[in-house]
Image (cartoon, rainbow, N blue to C red):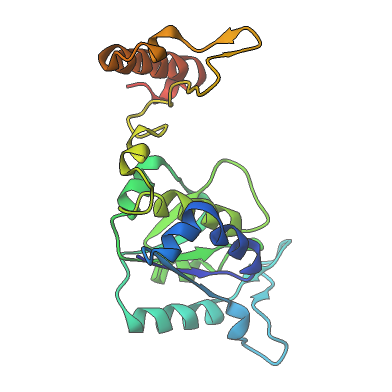
Length: 224
């Protein structure tokens, strides 16, 4: 998979991709991640990438030309399965979106900033818009990092145990059940006996029951 990230602040998210699962995926050549900065495509001698909004109002708007130049360059080189824009008014990103996007070969993620980007970029280039939640951040870099991590870990061959991702929260519209490891007793708190029984059928049943219970208490809206 190839992921091209368009951002005014690549240094904000380069670090997380040099560690943990995403680094492992890059080392295994399961994913290649490239950064493109609109500041490298200035529209004037001042290197401006933003301007005042037409109609007035507070804040600044990302200009069309630098982003369009990057988009045109990338789209001339290869076809992309999705061109994603990170925005508070996009669809809330969910596990099902990560599952779908992980099957693709080429993605572009455009990080929003300031008051947003000129709507014409969204109209011309963007195929999907995603939000990380119902709140506003300073820019789309952190959501882009979140989405990338969620997608990359699902690529076959990235995780040591590929079945691990199948038991993650939200994969079956349930939260994950409680998990335990050694020691079996800690300060009087014991691991549930069923997990020590070796009876895999009972363990599976217990985990399903606990997942449903946790979901019903914490995220009842997930239950169908």
